[in-house]
Image (cartoon, rainbow, N blue to C red; front, side):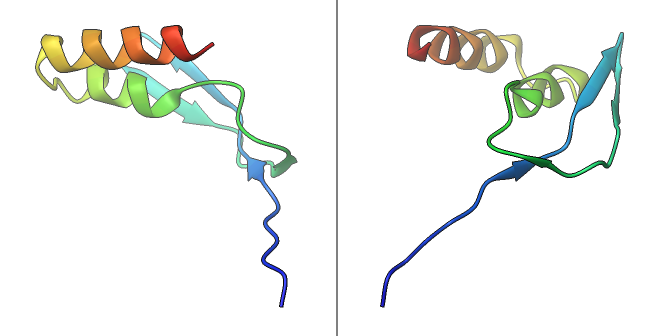
Length: 60
């Protein structure tokens, strides 16, 4: 049996300390890192946010 996976995503808009999703399913992987911005919005320690952002930017 072959394992296959299809990727889908929502688009989001960040406005100051809010994140809004369009809830329209789109084909393919997400092109943004909204989870990273959720760290910032929910006041995770800045060191975690900065290191996460650095690692994401490094991977591109």
